[in-house]
Length: 117
Image (cartoon, rainbow, N blue to C red; front, side, top):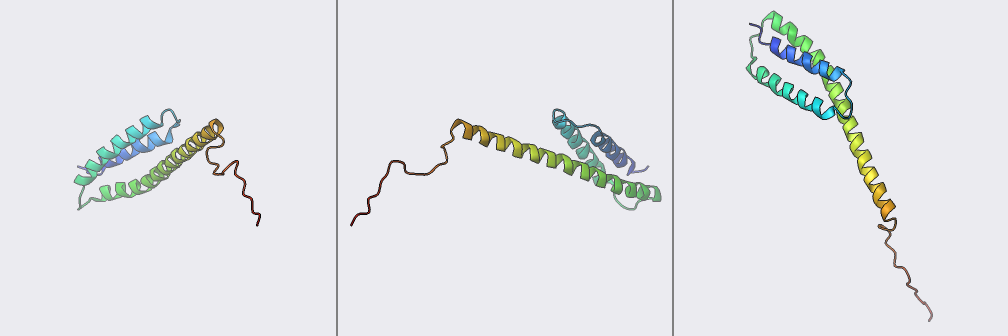
């Protein structure tokens, strides 16, 4: 029995999920699906050990290229999330400055110093 085939099948499922259109509303659901598949794939990977047949080695080579594509797509999703978090933080700061524009001003108003000798 080919021990690498279930790993390959799960990796293809992950790739198909990531190739689809991922909107901001669906992102959490997609991340949950991918996490579930990654955990399942991890259990299969723990049981796959040497010696590998030629067929398993060939599937392993295909897995490496597919995995690189998956990693790039996941990094782009992570970058999108980071950008959205920065925008939310910036929006909160803008709202706070709008409500209280003098919040961060550190001056002493109404003070006069006479320097006569």
